[in-house]
Length: 166
Ligand SMILES: [Zn+2]
Image 1 (tube, protein in one colour):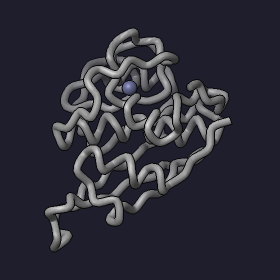
Image 2 (cartoon, rainbow, N blue to C red):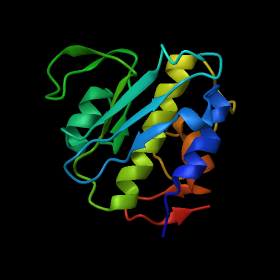
Image 3 (cartoon, protein in one colour):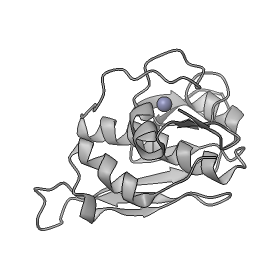
């Protein structure tokens, strides 16, 4: 089983330029989205915090529509994606990402929040700590930026059942 340690998250977001001591994190849980707030080390006045909200309003089919793909556990979009109902397009921001409300395992929910946070932080900061990390368990077959933060925080990837894949 996967285990979540907030101290690991603090360490891991250093890779994107955040001050580990500035991080405020609320984990997502069933029916309730969480959030991340952090400051860059140079932001000594704490004026330009980067906040990322994780939204649990949509199910896996709707998440798939938003990402213009098959049903998925989460999505983060910078710009144009699909509408949740699959009819037409909508605009999205990396400051607001999505975890599927179809997930039930508490560790799978937090791991998806962390994975999508990795996407958001790369999109927002322009920092890609690892070049093209491939996910072992996600079906896209494409390089997946969110996998870096997920592996860094959990020591592997977390399946829908909460199992840790090293
Ligand atoms: Zn991803």
